[in-house]
Image (tube, rainbow over all chains, first blue to last red):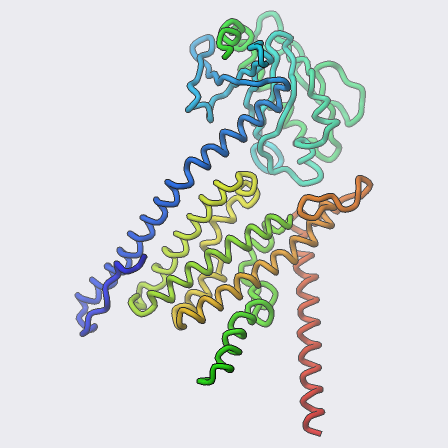
Length: 232
Length: 217
């Protein structure tokens, strides 16, 4: 790869030739480096894109149990519009359908500041029943063994399943904003279990749900026809 | 030196010194950033070790090839460009192999560029030695680095998560020692290994001295 660098000039002492030699060396190495990097990039890019798509697909089907197919949507004016498959990596909503084309729910992306870094999540929302179906943390840097329980603690995650996120009649805010109780304490339909020692992480999850629902629930609820029509 | 037997012995020594006597982590304390940061599981340690070994081997290979045509004034930028190229390639390949692995290693893959182990071998060894010796040295150092990462990774994963390469070892009643997978755990385990290595080196030296004294008397 480095054949491009010229041999040193025989005299070696001429300052002009010396500069040329230095520039040629750096230029040659940089050129070869660029060619190599582009080659590797071009040959790995399709695999990387496929990996990302597969990860997203798995995450969607995990929060929408029973879903066999999905269609990506994005907000448009008052409602929503379909996002072509090639742009779905950044879409905010994914509608999931079972094998007969019935709408199961909508996977919604959300994020909030956690203890260490942003927590990114995807959760299934049922716009008919106005409930959370399942919650999945996609990325978190929370403390292992404490805060990261939001991603794997089954008691905690189960307490989010079926959570009531219905809007009040004006459709501006949630009827009962989601809150958390102490770990293991009795809770209402709109409350999730806490995790002792990880209050900030739990509050981040609460913020993800409240914020995303206040932002998107009305739009999704009123676009049921669009969602159902889009069934593949 | 000219005899083939001593040449082979010397080659072996060039390779083996990186594993043990000049282990980059336990003896020189080089490349501490990945050593402390990504050794929370065996698989992360192994991936980081292999990635670093690949970059080390390829960069020192190229540096040794072109050592006679690179003017010494621009040798450091040249080395950095070469190292950065291979790091970028590794970054793409890891993403293509497994996104999960890529997320776990995070910024530390890009930071291989500034791993002083690689720069150190390029400058101190590859730019002054023949291709053959450079390759042996790089392999030895790379394997030694990977070995050291694994030493930390195995202890931290077993104590901190109760697993080995993701396989549960102790059943569900085991209370994981969470501090071991947190940053302080890295320092504690590294300190433990340094004690073991220092004790071992001292014992070797004492034995050698004793043997010499015996030979004299």
